Length: 439
Image (cartoon, rainbow, N blue to C red; front, side, top):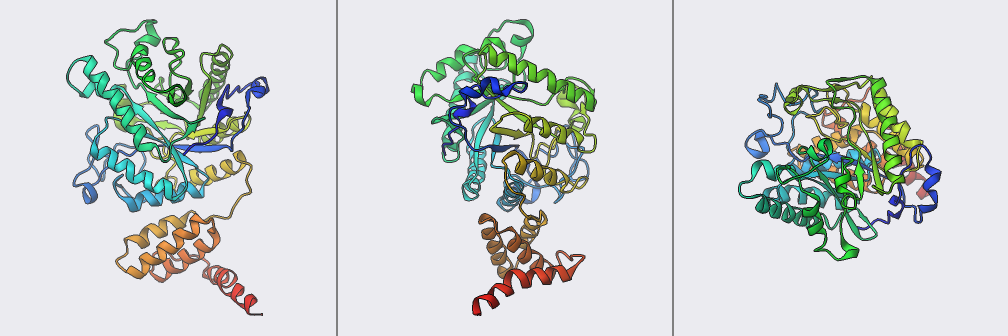
């Protein structure tokens, strides 16, 4: 799916957006993306835990996260749960996903294709975030063989995403995230011991594509070695290089990054900057990925609100929430037992402002109730869940809420505190219109 995002050309100048306004030739509707990880497995769906158990954790009691999913541990292979996630995203104004992908396998592609089928159903878009370092650490053979496998991976993933692909003037957007091998940044030189693609390796791959179809590549690093290779930057969480970071340091880091982005865009070393918002950071349960646990202050949602406020102060047609479900890094806004729906409520408030929409009545419990209905053995209940899903697709949120609450109460899944309100809503939404029609 192609979206005109020519507005991304000379996209963001935080401090003085008007400086680049003459280049915004085709301003597209603003879009909100969420960073999504499809890496979780459970015994009930997959036969064993994966993702939840890394770094010697022992689920379900001890997991690789400081926070716990609201509806317990889930599998990324569970289509019922995937749909519950997408319904929540839809309700809070998320338009698409940037999806973590690694080594291309039939199993990995099957999972992502299932997710993409649901994205199509809910009229959402996506782009892949490919981790090039993974092949260097896990594959055998020469560097040339590993590089060829990586380039094949990228081609294969772009084929998988084609029906939902975020594009700029027909050119697919692809993130290449180098999680290690940053010697070039630190020392100013690169060689074939790097655990990431080298500029000439990427350039050779790009040269196999027609000019009008060359993917637009983005990366999370400022690295002059890759000028004219990576067209833009996908902002990463800062500051995670410190073991502890305060709310004030979050603010200072964002201001510093603004200056770096403005300078790089002025010098034309990058043309696109995709900004991110995130609630905080805590990777202590995965030992900071071998670096010792790191923590960035959440400040009772203040960090998340501050970063959203900074987005609203600039002319940005696109923002990425980092993340929907990175439980390992403690950045998930997906409902948790600790925060329940708090981050989604905040997200809905800011996405409506960001996209200049009217605030729509929503009840974030509805997808949860639908999820529970789909697990019910009664065919009748499953059919009711399908009716509610269709209402959400049509953005008939109030009617969906009434049906969900009514049938959930009937099935003793949910007992509202004010049942009179449910009865009144039923009357207003379902009964009164029939009376009026008959007059």
